[in-house]
Length: 123
Image (cartoon, rainbow, N blue to C red; front, top):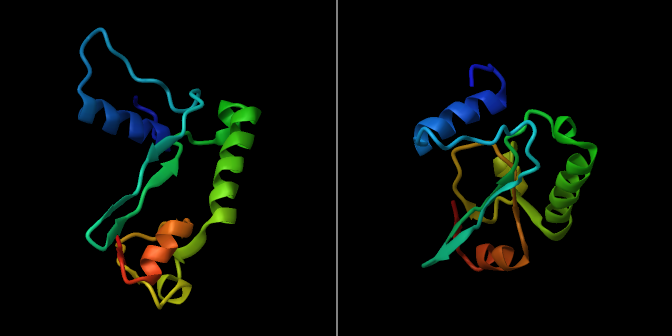
């Protein structure tokens, strides 16, 4: 819990947010082969982006198999999706209404891209 690493920060944030009882514990992100996924949302012309990722400091530190699996998942999203937001936000897809306050990379999967191209706002 006192580690200055990314997983240490997430462990402390998760501990504070979840407030586990004395008989509960958290899984160490650096040894747990878990991907966190939050599904995207779509309502009334607004697309909320989903998230997929890991809280581990290094995928290979968990295991070589885990690193391969994470890379396969991320590469699938890149192959099937279209980059609509990123570091050069204004140059990625200036024809789309994507309103983000961060510099993460956002890929729209085919149905989401159709909605964005049809005028939906991405947040």
